[in-house]
Image (cartoon, rainbow, N blue to C red):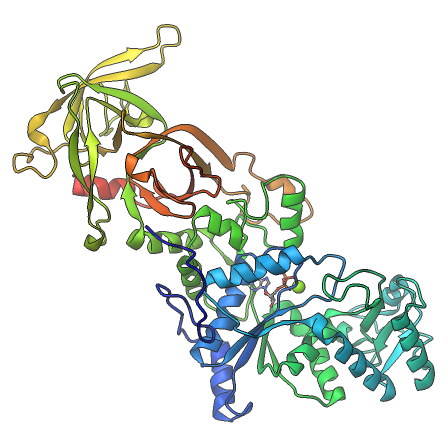
Length: 575
Ligand code: ATP
Ligand code: MG
């Protein structure tokens, strides 16, 4: 059994919790850092940050960025800050701030006392802006958002100067102060950097630094009615925190000249921005906007729905921090865009759980089996191995009796060729128990549906006993009817049935059959005390986690991932 969420211990910088591995793999970012250390560029310091905007829950793409930033800090014995990039009061919420911290911790990382908010710097950013105005490098502009866009030009045409571009420094200082005081309505004026309307880089065509927005902020309340843009807030926040390497995704590469321009004009400490390719996954949408729509439009049960690619959804599904860190390590860090097969993520979970998850037996779609030559009152305790990959996990006793359940699908009245499971007259081994033979099939008179199988067992074939040398081709799982517990099991399929569900009509590719709920499952009694987030392998069926909806007496399981090569394995061992 895996304890997934021990209370957080206060640990050193970026250290991972026990049981975890951190990648030491080389990548181009580490090469840059190695070089900077050699040249003593930042006096030997390595200081990164993870800067989420609190406008949604974190997803697996963020996990890549978290593992990268906190991982680098750990490997270089440096630091990594958690900084909320909370510059847009309209979309941001305290709920997200809390969920993000929880998710980063759960992944196994810690920021110690280095929790920051861009909003902590609003006053400082304002002073920086005044400094640029005084240098003649920023001006208050009265163009509307549409007009600004229209003046900006295109990739092939230069932009046009705003008629407000040449306001005097005094007028700019006065207007900027009055913007702050709340004298102007939303959108009436902006503060813009005075750079170059003909620059081939559109980001350099007098970008907006502040907009008027009369909105309450989740931390600063109504103190501000002008809010900085991402470009204006980000680099200066990096500088104030003395970040050395500001790692972000590729779409910010075109913003780097602006990042550098602000820092150079302000003549303040200058971190280095480095871009890497964001994670894209097949059959998955990753943007927070779309994830929010999935939640708000009711396609899923919430941000932590086990079908969501959010960290909290993956966690509920049964993903472990170890499996996500392993994934981040395997996909690596590159400079060019690519899409990772979601199967790779699933493999990481299998590899992790294969070593750690206890094996149990559960029957998802039960059919009753009566062993006619087995005595009625007898219950035998048979020995089952908890994890063939790890002998230290020991063995447990499972009850065997006259009435059992097996999977409906493990019986065929008219078996196809090479069907090695149960069929009339055929033999199969019950895992950890005996070889049984099907002697009769009971059916519902009206529907013709098979309701019960009558079998005999061969007492000489008990697993592990010296006489049990007889072999049959198939081995199936089962539970003893009387001792089994009823459970709900939720099976998941991909949320999208298209490999790349992009475009405006991405919702058209939502898989209507991504969730199947089975209410009549029978699980072995040893699962009675299983707690939410515990993980098991149901033999032959996959890895399953106990859902947070689970209650004593009403257990609920999620299938985290199927097994890769169930049949091959079971037929080989034949126990
Ligand atoms: P989204 O585009 O999914 O809405 P975002 O980039 O707006 O995400 P932020 O909260 O701004 O989300 O991201 C915080 C950090 O996580 C940023 O440094 C960003 O580069 C990184 N990040 C976001 N998405 C991915 C991804 N798919 N792969 C790797 N890193 C990512
Ligand atoms: Mg963003």
